[in-house]
Figure 1 (tube, rainbow, N blue to C red):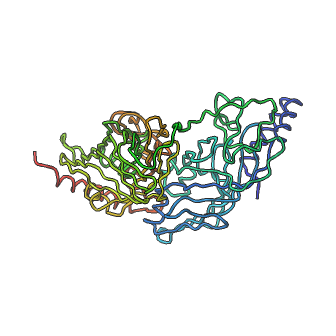
Figure 2: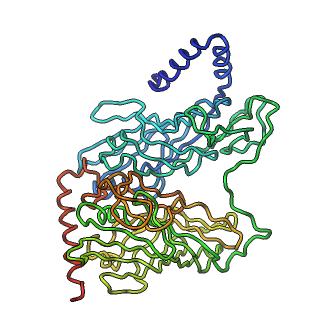
Length: 514
């Protein structure tokens, strides 16, 4: 495999620096090089972006084809690349891994074929790269996403790059929140001499200190370490990463839900449409709900209800409301839609999401907005908390009516993320949301000059703030209300704009007379 250009430049810079500093620096550089430990047996799982996968298989009538050992999870899920090997720098606490397998993304209908290969994860550069082949030409080491590196290296947040936006055919993807990334060791390998034998795979070795500010060669949040520090006198310190508090006794297999959060973005293209150049509207949360920055997903709180882990059933109700308002004319709105009283039921991995829907002053209670499908039928309590992430949500007939026919039944909504506490002292995972109401253009696609950190008004933040346990995965085109990439769809953007006018007419027909 050819040397990576970025890595080559970094090494050249290191040599120049060492020369300038003299023999001492050269000796230090030699020591750092000797500290690199070979790694193997890792695998990387990343879905790129859920809305992109939906676009390829639905709108583009295309396909994802893994090869060379790579695989895709069921129901158009994330991709896994095996055989990860590389090195770990025990001085800088960084690792660089390359993975086997490739992924072909193709659509005859929209005329594209993209091949991703040589997937790499570099914790020092905090990025994921790949060789990209299009039209018979391969570009090496294309940076696809910036990664928020964590010690455990599971569920790491990603943000798509400008290069990824070009590869996947939508300018709106630049800076957009991608799917979470996980890098774990699946095959046990020999531990270098001097390493502790009890370090669990995929967890970080303790270190005596962490840098005050992150740097490319030493992240403030270290990835999983395959070996102990080279200094035998280093005293381990406790990890600062949050962990669920354990109860003195295990919660019963069934009982009452004490608290919890529901993360749901409704639909990213709808959020973008409301605050974009068509509706010129606002999004406002209330009664305990909040929205992530950058026109991100919503978090509903205060869960109550029941659960039964043996039966795999759960029913939870949540506090909070979200209002979408747009198409203002003479002080009246053609769009004024509120969701409140959200409820989620799951039974063996399938379920429903219901809400009270108020449209133009008319309220309908317990409307079934979406059919839900979890990745697993099982419900498992961990630290007295049941978490079900990435639940697929499909719009129902009743839900389509709630949107005034803007979306058809069967359309994919943003995924649902659910965490419920079974005991009073259980610690719910962080949600990454922002307090108070918030509006924005989302994923860099909206108009500039607004506010995205509270209250109402059109926003201009560049990224959605969805967290890994409550945020929806978003990305789209604020000017059209579509989450179909521009480059692949072309002139169909005009059709989407017409659909926006259609929902305005539908909603106005339902507006009561003054």
